[in-house]
Image (cartoon, rainbow, N blue to C red; front, side, top):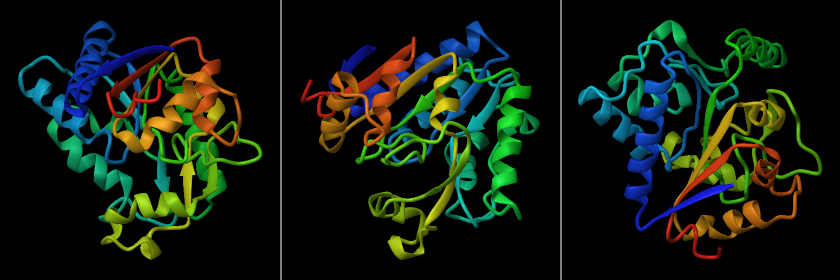
Length: 242
C-alpha cells in the first residue's frame, strides 16, 4: 500500500481532490466509484473548487456510487443520492446520463443488485474507486461478518453504522434504514485502483489493522491488502498507530 500522511484532514482532502482531478485529465472517460459519509465531504468541496477553476472536467466521466439505503427513494433527504447531489453533482459538469446509482426503493432489491453489477460491467469496470472506512472497519456497506459477499448485495447494517448515519435522518438512529445495498468486496477489488481516505483518531485502530493485518472478514478493509494498487490518504490522527 502507498500511504500518504498529512498534518490535517483538510490537507488530506485537498490532496485527494487533486489526485482525482489529475485522473480526470489523464483519462477523461474514467469510470469512478464514489463514497458517501462525513470523510469525503471536504474532498468533494475541493473538487467543486477545482472544477470552478477549470482544472477538474467531469464531462466525459462516468460515476457509480458504492451504496444506498434500502427502502429509500432517491429524492428522500436522507438518501445517498441526495447527499451526492448536494456535495458534488450540482457543482461539477457530470453528464446526468453517466451517473449510476443503486435504487434503494426498487421492488426487487436482489434484482436491483444484479442490474447494478451488469451496468458496471457494461461500463468496462471501475477505473478509480474512492473509499472511506467505518469505525468498525467496513468499506462500502460491507460490514464485519464471518464471510463477505463478492458482488453487489443487500446487507444488514450494524448498530454502529446506523448511529454514524443518523445525521441524515434527523439525528435519530432509529430512523436509519436497517438494510442497505452495497457493492461487494469482489466488485471493489476488481477496480483498477483504490484510494482510501481516513481522518481522525477514531479510525486509527482500523487503519493500523488494515495495513498490518491479519486478513479477516471481521475487518473488511483488510481485504485491500489483496489489491495491486491501493493508496491511503491519512491525517496524523488516523495514522497515529502506524
